[in-house]
Structures are given as structure tokens and as C-alpha cells.
Image (cartoon, rainbow, N blue to C red; front, side, top):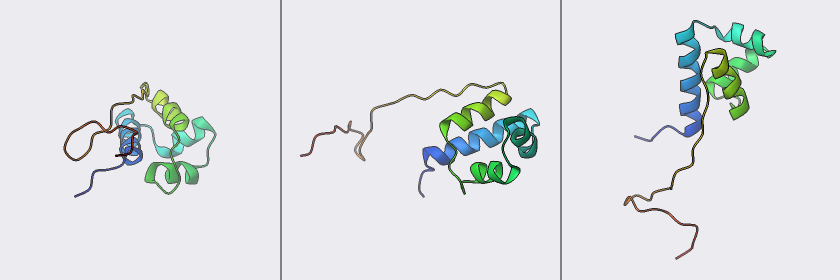
Amino acid sequence: MTQPSPADELQVIVRTALHDKGISQAEAARQLGLSTKHMGHMLTGRAPLALDWAERLLALCGKRLTVRAVAARNHRGRAVTGRQP
């Protein structure tokens, strides 16, 4: 089984936040000046959900988006460097 991509995880986080706050996709689209079609596409992966749009959507829900970079790991759990072997 494959792990969801960070983009997929972000879509789930945003959809869940909207649901928990009782904000429909149509209402979120209206408040942000987007078409409901484009909003639906962003939240289902048919259009990319850019970080700035995710941040705006989460703000409607009273949430804040934070991004952090962590060291990449290989299948053995070792840190991956930019060097070639």
C-alpha cells in the first residue's frame, strides 16, 4: 500500500477543516472569490491546491497552515544527502 502524497494529505486536512467548521465548498468558494467548480477541483486533486489557497481556506476555519522541512530518509532510515555515491 502506498503512502498518500503531501498534496493528498493537504487536501484531506483542508476538506476536514471545512467540514468540521460547517463551511460548504460553495460557501468557501464564494468567500474567496472562486468558482465552485474550481474549488471542488482543488479539493479533489483535479486541480493543484497551492499552499496559498490552502492557507486561505484554513484561515476561514480558524486554522493556520505551517510548513516544515525535515531530513529525508531512505528505506533503511538513514538520512539522504544531496551527494551522489
